[in-house]
Image (spheres, rainbow over the protein chains, first blue to last red):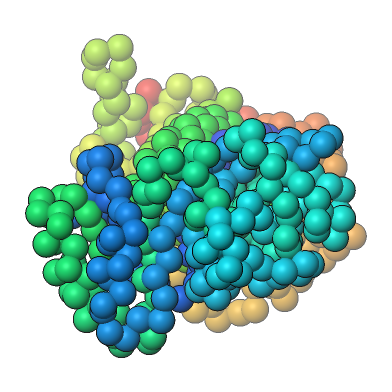
Length: 400
Length: 223
């Protein structure tokens, strides 16, 4: 124990004496570890963000979408051309154990008040939208069945849009916004659900309107997606089967449409992002190798500088393995220090990011970062350490 | 205690073989105070390296307490150096980044056997005996040459070695300080019964020991 404490202490004393050199050598590992950790935490954050967005859409939802979404590994083209219509909605209404079917029209378009404008996503559906997608109203009212039946030109704004266009969410109620050249009355403003940040869309930036009021930009009254709300989680598989069976009568090609539940879409998206993240992390890991080479370089210099010291230690009884341990411990500590500093840096960056984005660092990431950085020390420290250990005691002690 | 039997040592030098020692046999008994005297290039340093187990002979045997150590592995030689030999060098060879106390304690760090003494107590005692008690926290480059050599002697003695090998111990010191170091080594031999071998090229130094072995061109020429 004393022996290892002695080795560690002399390593730390050496670092203290060569503060600048230690810092510069660890810098490579610091950059490598922090970029890897940051990318992993961004990946984790992205997953959390997507999950959060899906959860905010409501639970027990089944999506009916055009194209083959999950088959054949990943999201294949959904542009098979088919779009759903009111007839499909009526067909699906025959399924038991469902509480609502939402026909969805989505469009990204410019929305203007008198003074401001911006590009936002419109989600048009029936009045059930608010219940199914858990959209609560903060100011004013939600549009009603009668609005849908009449095709009233009314909207419910997400709180962020309302603030952007009218200063405060409260002020927006009763005002008129212009969409695709037509005036729509703001009937209500939704409660904030959070999310978004770093330029990513948030449900707080959605505009809701009756699907019957979308004639100007959806003249053929087609729906991009249909949401089926199941009564309970247990009935989902049965409803999916039934929906597939019913729609297959009209759309005969099996790639024409998909009936999927939230978790399937989530898994598909997550698997794509995981691969992307892995590639980025692998690229960032190259900087760890560069950092490792830096450590190896400085350790070789350190061996040359200390040849005489090595000779003295060997003369008074240090074995080759003792010298090897000493230099290896220094290399591992050097890269471990870099790793720890890199980790601290990433903690700070993630902390700053969290105001905008749900990035986080989990325990496995911390352990991997420290493990990998120490591993780099072993990998790149072993050659210089072996060189030191293999020096002949006589030649080393005579070295000037 | 230490026996060299028909020791020869050859080195490769510029592609040729150089015979540094030729058929050297000698015995050093426990408690002896011996000088190995010879001019530079005579082979005395090679002899010291072999007696100090820093190097192995090309031919011949080294026996320590009748155990043949010439077939020892590198690790066994390291352990034997640690337990049996105390070195004192002309250049002092202290480690500058370690304190005086740490330098003296260093051999105990590498000890493979449980020590029969408390390392710190013994180091304190040695440093006190050598008048260095006020310097234990100092670093070697902050004390005089004579003091550094006394630290080196304390380091050589900490493991209670069978043999103290001093290679030109006064070579880097002025004559007064050198005399003091020689007095110290003499005292160690007389009072502590330490076996001391001094390697030197100076006849005056060798004259102070009880036994003189003269070496020239790799052979013992006079005893």
